[in-house]
Length: 273
Image 1 (cartoon, one colour):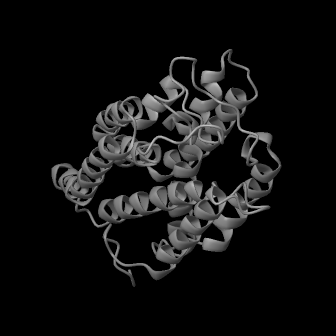
Image 2: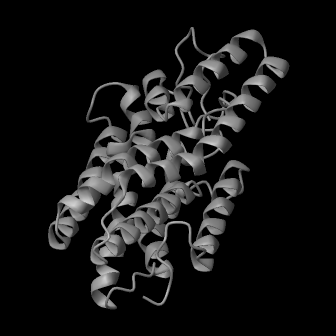
Image 3: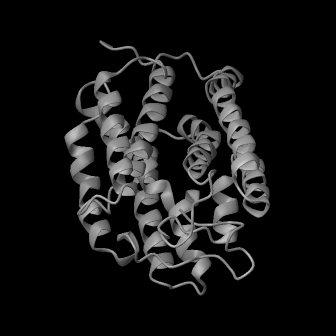
């Protein structure tokens, strides 16, 4: 291969794509007109994550090296845990210093879930609304994305090594279609209860479409260009970009129109983002 396939190798086009994703999310939260769908940047990150991990696993498998799972997860821990732990500690200390007692206690509680990469499960359970504008957000709110990614990384290496390429492609397509259908069903109220509408945004089963899309691109690219798996940035942006328009027109994506997701006793304790 002409490029390094290690997980930590520097890829300028990937870093550029991540910069675009961050910009979209920041502008979305800043309330820039016509960019209420900028939360699509989260999906871009998930596509990149699915692509990179699948690309690396395929490279190891084709080289006959296998995957040293202990070393792989140890590397993940060294990369994620120090920064995550520092952020959580600082957030908790700042919350205790600057927030009222109820919100500070809530932040510490949220941080405990985030520390074991279950923040998304916790926020789905309490009904934290990512799009609510009436309540201040939990300072731990955005840790749900890290939880989704790490949950996926916990399982995906075993799946990639257990299946052949054709089966993986079929599985990726099934994951994309299944996750999209599940999310639509949740948002449209096919399942009873407002909880499911929030869960559609933060739980792994409903977010696997972007991760699986990245995996599918890695698989397809290796077939098309003989083992050199490069992320076709324009293709990914086109596939996912239609959600920016859809998000901007969705009532829950517009500033000021998100409804509160907290129960009467949790208004200050677990606010939405």
